Length: 155
Ligand code: HEC
Image (tube, rainbow, N blue to C red; front, side):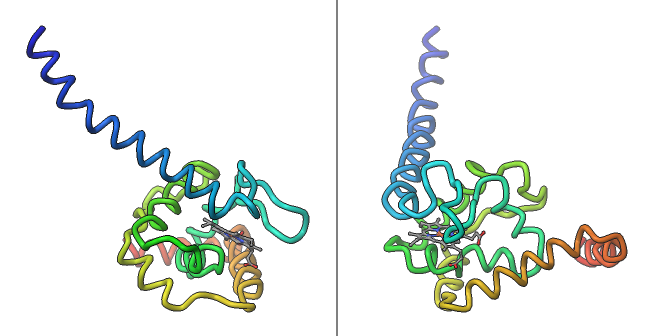
């Protein structure tokens, strides 16, 4: 019994830390993102695209991983690199878990810091459209072969 209690006490700070960071990410989302992206990551008319059910798809096309950080709302957010990395990892799980590629590596503060140095400006929409076109091509039968080859190269 004492041993079990001791084990529980040792676990408690870990559980709290996880709950804290979940809470931090939710608050950061409310303060910095929700005004445009809504509480549930839904679209706002034609102006703001939905994140829910789609945002993680960017991770499976070249350039998409970078885009998710370089997009102005993320790169320019008044948050430090670590908090943005955490928030982005949280956002992907929270709004689009199903589309996260199996080999996804979580964003780190260093990666975010480097990408934020070249934020997208008014060209964000063009970059976005190109990435979405790449996603479409991945579903096309003739490019499946290319994708299979690409995977072989990576692995
Ligand atoms: C002022 C409104 C606004 C705010 C605030 C904002 N965004 Fe965005 N976000 C947009 C718009 C508009 C786009 C579409 C790309 C573009 O034109 O910038 C976008 C695109 C994105 C994308 C890429 C997904 C896609 O489909 O293009 C991600 C990821 C994202 N935002 C996350 C966030 C996060 C995280 C925050 C908070 C730290 C945030 N945004 C704050 C308006 C906003």
